[in-house]
Figure 1 (cartoon, rainbow, N blue to C red):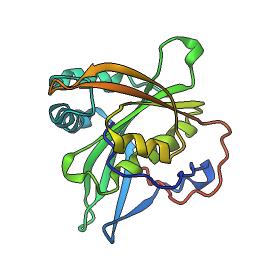
Figure 2: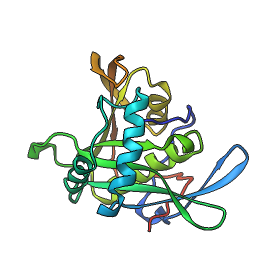
Figure 3: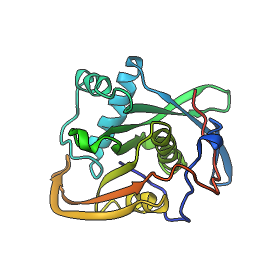
Figure 4: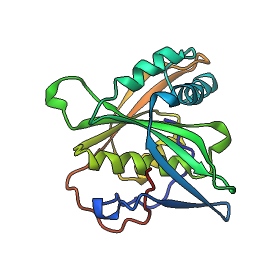
Amino acid sequence: MPMREGRGPVAAPLTHEQDVRGLLCRYAGAMQQFRYRLATMDDVAVITDIYNEAVMAGGSTADTVPVTYEARRRWIEAHVDPYAVLVFEAITDDGEAEEVGFGAISVFYDRPGYDGVCDLAYYVTARWQRRGVGRFALRALLNECRARAMRKACAIIFSDNTASNALVESFGFEPFGEMPEAAYDSRGVLHNMSYWCLDLTPMKATGAVEGIVRR
């Protein structure tokens, strides 16, 4: 879950009334528009390529070798409602959409008593990191969680990924544990794992500062 933004004030979640399906992000003095959509089978290649880029870079996933297109296709197919895979797009200067990342609302644990508890993750292509995509991605995922009546969102992040941990904390996630020496990455580095949780009830929130574009 490679998030590259730093600490800031706790970000207020969106209410359904505030889900205006649009967002302009400011970074480095410029404005950039992002939007998101539900992934389809047409997105298998771009999702796989972005994920494998993260796998080979190390530091953000416990997959140690690149995954195949077929494996990622099955992964997308497994995300049936209320779970979902999202694709994040940046709108270029000429009005075209460029896929810059993807995220997922996944099963946290597959026993029925955990219904409504989900695991969040997202990945941003290297060229678009540190440009606001990460913050947009997490807000979009939480927006969809609320629309899908999720009650808790969890994030599992390498403990030494300080930027990722800081970002979830800025959205109000609270730590609930750490597993020492939990997982290796593709470079053979052994990481501790941090566990974070955000209570999504009550549904109402105030002070939202961003809207979300979904198409």
